[in-house]
Image 1 (cartoon, rainbow, N blue to C red):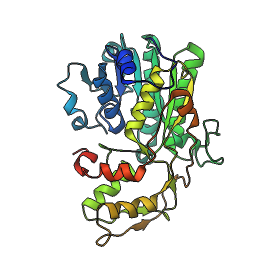
Image 2: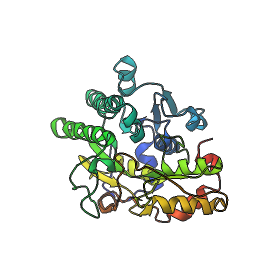
Image 3: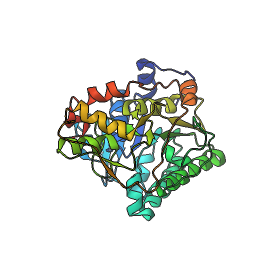
Image 4: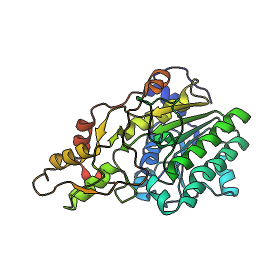
Length: 335
């Protein structure tokens, strides 16, 4: 699987790199994973979407099922059987996006650990056994916990304050071990507050889609705490580009990157602005609830490393992008 050391890639570069490659996307029917699958299918890769559909939705990938280079494999990342062996045989790259989400961890921390740590270990073992050329691990800014240094770069101490942060950090440590001990070519991408079409809008989804669903249902958006907690909202298509760049770059081996826009938006500003955008400001208002356990107050993310080493750029017009995206609310909510 040849690679490039370029910090930016053209469409032709991407097609040349991925066309005909066997690629596995775990969590491929989920919010982010489905966008990764979509781009890889368009680039001509032979895409295998691995998902147990506990959170992923078939509707997220239904439009791809007629493509000859797209395949759905209904499996749990923790499974260990002949189907998994067949799946990994001849695979060139794994984009590991399957995860037990942050909100789920409070309900079932054992399952959270099983998926985010054990599932990652299982996939790494298969990747090593079948000599997969690249393993890209989706992680999270939650591994840092409540940041102590701003802006927060990849060298910040790991002090997670949630089960989710702990289990995702355990997954990262397994990735590092397989790189250092066995030479597996790995890259870790730490996601921050991703938003965009197909984002889950139930209690396990992202705040943008949750607010959107409530407003459309004529319910007040609920802000937990005082709403002054800041997030670095990142457009989902930028995360797709980060995944592709990590797979293509010769510099990314054994590295971890903050994959975040770097912009700062408070939850209260998000709620009030969405009410205005959707013209519900007079009928609805922001409600306040008790602070969430493990909720982090401030994010000021340093994304220089991924920009400089992988050439990834991030959309800085959050409000403009959100306003445009909300012109089709059904698509945003994956309906």
